[in-house]
Length: 374
Image 1 (spheres, rainbow, N blue to C red):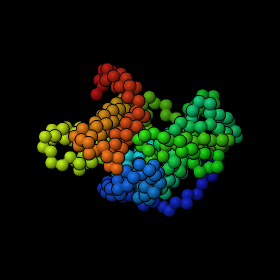
Image 2: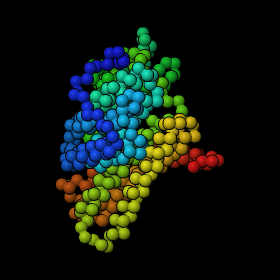
Image 3: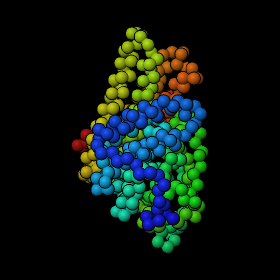
Image 4: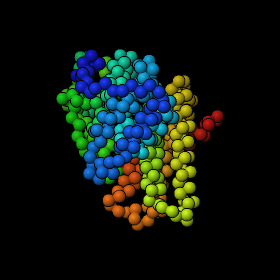
């Protein structure tokens, strides 16, 4: 049953509670270094990083965005983005699952009723993970008692294979957009591992198929009604963070392989500057999102969305450019199958496909053309 009162008892040991931003950064760096050791092997053989995601949960990192009112650390958005970038540098697929998880928590924070927030944030503190999904057309959501009876399937979404909970967007009758919070382990929820992309091969993408699933009213929240909700802006910011992590991973392999080649130092310097510029864009967007969360006025939310869009576009271009430079500057030796250096380009290319670039550029043009825009 998808209800607050009947949420399943977690069998996972309680997660560690991170007490400071310094501890969060230190923990993310340690985990990233561990994840990186076998990231190439996992990519080659498509070994899903269940153990790595469990390590993230146990460390307490998956709970660092929870508000203090619910016993969380509530790190700044710039720091949250940096932590996702650090994890993505170790393994981009793990970083993408973490990106999806934090976006769900922001939507939960801004939209859900108090009882639902308290119940699910408590689960996150215990180590539970979330993934967002969207039901496709043809989904049947019919009123039934104090809730709805649901049958349908979601779009393919990263992180579902690692999630304990699915936050699924749907339309309740007559035409009310809502978010349904469903326990992934419920017998009425089937998760199909149908991802076959050539990049982000281990990001836990899957399709959820739901049959005659009863969702109680207290496990449903209204969908965001504002034009630029903070959950969307955070999603763009953390997408930028994953791209930044991919760029840094490619950069590390570039430096390791380049040797002493003074002739290419200008190109190396160019890539370093672009990575630093992308990191600065993430930090700026994170600060603007902090402001929008504290003061969710339309102007502040639009400003945060604009900066997060810019960061996502810039970081995506930086990841692709750095992955390309790895082959251009290292030469033929970089093409060895055993090295698997092409995974950086594949990861960057696939990750960029989910960014609605043209739509964001249109929104940016619309925003900056208004009087008084930043």
